[in-house]
Image (cartoon, rainbow over the protein chains, first blue to last red):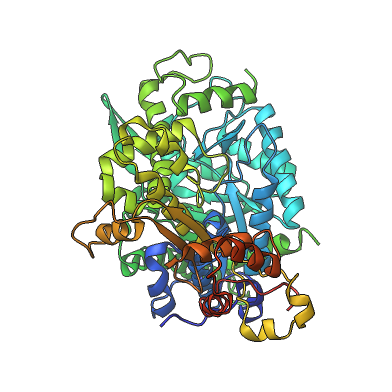
Length: 327
Length: 254
């Protein structure tokens, strides 16, 4: 017997009001977890999906509708191709906006990368040279998208495997400037920073220390793979393994710098059990809680009268800004 | 070099027009790991992402020809017809036409029609959600307006015909059958999604003719034209059957 299906366009009244999730850490809702996510007692926090997988109707929309009734949602696009020299596809914007209007996500995002050129769309995250020309093209498309959506979006730092001779600035400078020029927020992928630092020989901690704290609205954690190339190792952002120890350390550093920003555990291939995925989320939650506890202790010792510090304060302020940017 | 030019050269290399061994020294910085190795990561990712998305839409084809054959065919298709949008749900909607001209599949003449069946199943599965027309909706239409009333098939409803026994071949793929008599005759099919699950229903030749007309013609004209070709066409029975199967779309204003 098939379940009763509510019409997605008419279901929004049943959703919890859009807002920052009460839990800081979420997981990616992927096809193998559909049924279990609706039935489990595990703490899933919030959910993230790629909007491109829900441009049609049917079972996928149905499960997303049911999941959204229980959880806050972040829509993380992979197909806008914000870094293309040409303009973002209006059809893609229109389909993405339809989902934003229906599902009321607390965050919307895509990447600082490109995939469309001419009449071909490579459907992968291609690298950008960090030049003023690229920055202008990226910012044009971010502004176009934000205007179309009527709200602020987040843009994610990529993993890349080549560097361009034309680079005129570092990646963190490029990301900060994109945020300053467009008012977008940054989605800081901690695993990507680690991968980039290894592949291009720079300091991941320094990268984080140079990202403007005002811009960060979401963080991502994922596993990566190592590939041997001659005597060298190259790291590839494969999203098919647990988060590596070094990346956890970097995340702890990021939480101390940016606060308890909503954080996603990404896993897109070779899926583990939901329990194992949630265990990764629990680990991130524990890091946030430990830092919160140590900050509370430090505050009490330095000023017993003061209110307790709250790691979420930073994120909440950012999010209020995010929700009202377009008003 | 301009950004647009870099992106065109990169795209051409991903889609096979340029080898990673070609000189990209004016674009990419040199370091410890050889450029071809780095570029192959992107190439493998692109072919992997797009190839997996394509092959996921053709599970029966994989059963029929095996993964290796389908992978090779998919690769040729991707290079000849790369995706044009940033979402792959409907990618491969002309795969059946490509297979017709794919030389290694020449001895499998039923393969394009099996691909068409899977294309329609994917269209049905991901079609826009709408509401079905009910008998009570129809009863509210005054009789004098019924002839010119447009009864539209739902977005998820598609019709096809094949000279091959596609349902039997499908059963074989799903391991419900042991062998298929390839000369047992063709079929007329409706691929549709009443609610969440996509279904494939066999229909008669006259039903196929009638239902296909409804995309263009109002009800009365479609019935009259079908009756001209098929004098035995039993309109009341066919209408009742398809109301039950939830084939038709409720008009927007109801």
